[in-house]
Length: 607
Image (cartoon, rainbow, N blue to C red):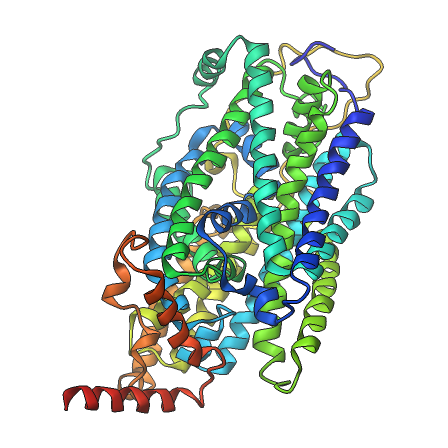
């Protein structure tokens, strides 16, 4: 078959399987190595937070890898191929997210010395709100992780010929092994390895595509002629899927919710040995996100340059948009034994890093928020065994959720929609508590419920009645250059799924207005609704008259000093962290004692 003209492609060679299997075994080996290396350090703090002794660079690479999953490897190039380079504008969102998280959230969480991000909700509001927040996180993460496992398996099933569900179970099993044995250190150092492999996969696709097309300039010109480079659309219409404003405003808020209050990420940067390292890890992570999304988008442009005259989706060579990049890899790289295996390893590396992050974080919040407050007499050894057992349990749950994820359509948009619908109200609750003293438990709870109802309404409505092409604006593709293989049975082209109705005979009035809201605004909607309604309800329920709260629970002016990495000594960082240990097991009953102590210190200072 001539490249770029359609038809069947080659399948995996023996060397591809060797490279793929070697990468997966290496990932599991890192977990085993960390387990053996740290077998004497079996405390819960060591398992869940790496002993709080991690440094900035490996944590930064882990932060990048944990959400640059197989969905990114598979979904982002397909997004650029079909919709152009607008996705690259998320680089602005990453910058906003890094600054807000590093300068507002990290100092607060670091000062409180928390293990679970949701401990803060109990300190600031009440234990029921903490448990609700944790439960929302568990549901969100299980759904997202199922999507992460299912999407690459579905796409790569086409080119490997391996049984789909067999691959799913194997993926989950590897993650369970190095999560349950190695803890957070295994997850972080495995992420570093997997990050390198993911980037190498993108580089291999771009390099081979440039050789075939006659250089990077040719790829760029083909993309320009096909309208793929028109990224800056300044239309303020909130119903349009991707514009400059939806990505800058909605995307920034969404990524802030992902990095600032998501336990998978919080757990990483509070594992750093100093506050300076924690902040720096987020800024280094920002650069890593820029590099990753740039390579992913350019891989999509390379794919367009090759298939500009024969779209595999319209030609029936693939059945979903998410199978495009694996199809390209087997089309242009099959002649190089081991290289397709490297790409499959890249996609699965992204999957493994995200799944392992999710399992480790789910274990952390379950132990800290549900088990430890009830079973306070457990020995460190019992807690360690419980951590391992929960890793196995959550691994099995995430594999099961892959079946639910199979009904959710485009993997990239579905993944970000999940975060928007659930993280938006949670982010609003945190900002309500961190920035204002008036909000009370009743206002926070009511505000979060209202925000969650609204985001679920618009999000589920958008799944049932997908926006029309006028709102999503897919770019044109062509099949004029396709050749017909008489021995090849074509498959009906993929169409956007409608989960509960096979035909769109009925579209309610809201389908082309409310349900067509850009998925990037889900998070902003939930955040703003929670803050506004939470403030109003708090004012009506005595929030202005509640007792004085500890200043440690609010953002401080001195927290907002950018790039404090070199201006603050490790000794002062460690002193601050040690002083915050009083909050490690704080609950509602201990806060008044701490406030009394603070007042006594203030009186002594005045004297």
